Image (cartoon, rainbow, N blue to C red):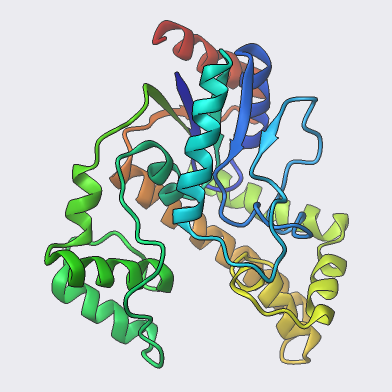
Length: 290
C-alpha cells in the first residue's frame, strides 16, 4: 500500500511522515516541486533531520536544470515499485498536488509542450483556457499548467479538467490530509517565515541572487524573488517579509482548493499542542484500512 501525506504548507506533513515511516517500515518520496533542487533548503522548508529514514527525490538537481511533472512521474513510479517490491511502505509527502496525481494515477504527459505561448501574458492565457475549459481548477498565475492544459486541449479537443476527473488510480493508496482552522494556519505560516529568517533565509537568498541564476527553480519558491526585490533596492526588508507571508498564506489557500477538488483525502486536524495525538490518530486509521 502507498500512503500519501498531503495538505497546505505549515500543517506538519514532514513530522507526520517521519512518524509514519518509523512505524510502517516506510520510505519517504518527496512530492514537492521545489525540494528536488540542491541549495534551496530554508525557503522550501526541506527536512533537515531524516531520523535515518530513506528519503527520495530530495536534492537531486542543480538550480539551473528544469524538472517537469513528466520527470517526476517517471522517477516516482520507479521508486514506488522498488519500495513495494522490497516489502516496505512508500510514503509520498508534499503539497504539490499535481505531482501526487501524476505518480499515482493513469496520467499521460507529453515530455515537451507543443506551444510555449511566448509573449502572451498570464491574463491572456487564462482567458484562453477559460474559453475551452470553464471548469478548470488551475490558478491564474500557474503559467506552466495553463500552457499544459491549452496544449492538451489542442491535441485532444477536450478539456484538461475532464482528463483529471477520469484518471484511474494505479496503486492501492490511502490519502491522508492534514488541516487546521484558517486563522491558526495563517498564524503558523507567519511564525514559520520568522523562523526561516532566523535560520538564514536572507543569506540563502543572497547566495542565489549573487549566482545570477534566474531559472524556474529559483523564481518559483516563495521567499527568494521577494528578497531579490529588496537586494535590488526596490522595496524594504519589512515589505519583502510581509509579502512572503502574504503569498505563503495565499498559496496555502490555493492548496486547500486544489486538494478538495482533486483528491479524496481523509482529513485530520493538526493538534499543535500535542502533535503525537494527531500522529497516533492517523496511524490507527491506516492500520484499520490496510
